[in-house]
Image (cartoon, rainbow, N blue to C red; front, side, top):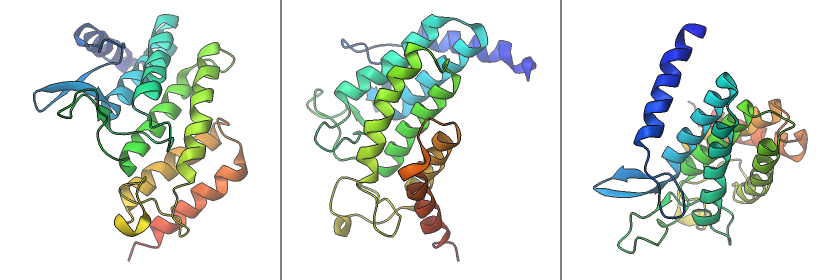
Length: 206
């Protein structure tokens, strides 16, 4: 609805004016009197910029959106597991990542990747840079799917030590399906992963 464009862009400009960044360039979010890099906030910041870029045609919005994902990928994503910690800057050691990988946090990252890519020109370098982040991340994430289709609350610890979580599983399944629907991911093997997760969540509904 074009009636919402002006307020959307106004609020986006306000967000940009008020944004603060780490020394590495990652957008910061304040939580409990500490400012750190938080994946929940970054994915919304980046996807909003991508949408604003699509409305206005401004490539600098696209550049900043993609840049945030590249920075967070290098600092907040665990190179050993391929999963994202919730953030960095909130621990006693401000250079330490928050512990473990939360399932809904993985959903937030996947949501941000897919929602950002929807607004990027498909033949652009911006889109291709995001694809290079999407594929290895999703391939890492599906390794941690429970055989019954669920992801557990803390994805990166043994399944016996963390309970299966419907909210995280549903979150991940939805954005996997949306990525496939938009041809960001091929159907195989990802469609079966998403359907298995959807069936797992449905099995929890009594």
